Length: 450
Image (cartoon, rainbow, N blue to C red; front, side, top):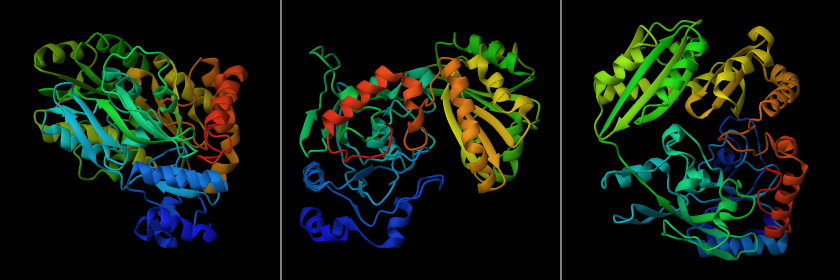
C-alpha cells in the first residue's frame, strides 16, 4: 500500500488520509474485538466525486477496499481481512434537506443515526428504525446491512423506507438512483440490490429516506412471567394492539447477571433466574393507559409502567445494556437469528441440552421473531474450540425451522461460509453472478457475505 500513498494524496489530500498505526488500530478491529485487520491506510473522502476517484484508482490497480461506517458490525462486515484500503465515510456527514411536504430526508451516508434524529426532532419526525448503536452507527452502514433494531414490529424493515440512493460502483461510476417519489413503478428497482449487500456491490454515498412522525405519547410496560409459554400467550395478545411499538424479551438469568454492571439503574423487579421478562412499548397520538394496563394485567401479577420520561429511558436501558454487559462477562459468541417466536426456548435447549455447558442465554426482538442467542466462555481457547460445533448445530436448527441465519446483523466474515446452505445452491449462484457483474475484479469488501 505504501507505494500508492502519493497517488491517494493527490486524490483525497493528506488531510483525508490516516496512516498512523495508533489511529488505524480501532479501524482494523471490529466492535467485539473478534476480527483484526492489517490495513496500513484509511482514506476519509469528503464527497461522492472523491469516492468515485478512489474506487476508479483502486479498480485499475487491483487494490482491495473495505467501506466503513460506524464500525459497529457484530459479524466483521466492516473490518479488513488483510491489508485492504479502508474507505471511511465519516466525513460525508451532511444532512442536505428535509422536505416537510413529503417527510423525506436526504443525507450523506456518514450521518450518525442519533444526529439524524436530533435534526428531525425540530420537525416532529424521526428515522423509522432505531438501534442500540444509534450514537455511532451511520446511515450508509444501516442501509448497506438493512439494519433491524427495536421497532421493526411497528414499522417493518428498513428497506421499506429507502426511496432513493446514490451509489459509487467498484469501477468508480456514480449510479444516481436518488428518488423522492413514494410511487415509482418504472421497472426493476435497482436500489434494492444495494440494500443489505454489505458494501460488496457498491458504496452508498447518499440516500432519500421516508421519515415517520414522532408519537405524541410513549408508554412502556415491564412484565415478569413465570414461563415461556406465558410469554408467547402475551405476544399473541399484544400483536392485536394497534399502537404496539416494541415487544422485547429477556431471560431472568441474563438480567440477574447484568445487575452488577448497571449500578446506576433501579431494577423494576427483583430479577429471578427462573422468570421471564418482557418490555412492551405502546406509542401513538393518544394512549389510554388503563386500557393497556388492564389487558396486560391478565397475563401477570408483576407489572410496572413508567410515569415519566426518565423512568421510560431507564426501563429501555435494561434491555439495551444487555449486549454490552454480556461482553463484560467473558468471551462471547453471539448469534442473530430469525426463527418462529414460539421456538426460542426450544432452540436454546437444543444447542446445549438442558442448557448445560458454558453459560448461554437468549433475548431479543420477540415481536418480529429475532432471537439473539449468546454463549459466554471463560477463555478464548475454549470459545474457539467450541465455535465450529456450535455453529454447525445452530445453522442446522435454523435451517430445519425455515429460519434465517441473520435477522439483522448481516453476514460479514462470521457467516459467509454458511450462505449457500441458507440460500440454496441456485439462489446463491445468482448472488455470485451479481457480484461478478458489478465487481468483476472483486475489489470491494472481499471475503465478506459471499
